[in-house]
Image (cartoon, rainbow, N blue to C red; front, side, top):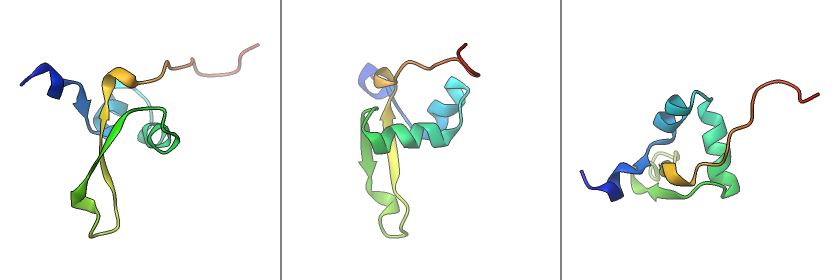
Length: 67
């Protein structure tokens, strides 16, 4: 695989890699925080599918309250 294709992955795989919930990654997609590509397969069944760019992932905060 080329380096260009290595940086693109599914939102579920990115969430698993980062150890976060997939809904967080989908929130980044909706907010435009992370670069994504729309895949056309899910259009007919009403579900969108995406590929996300790992290199544009925002910095993660630690869990819990900040005192």
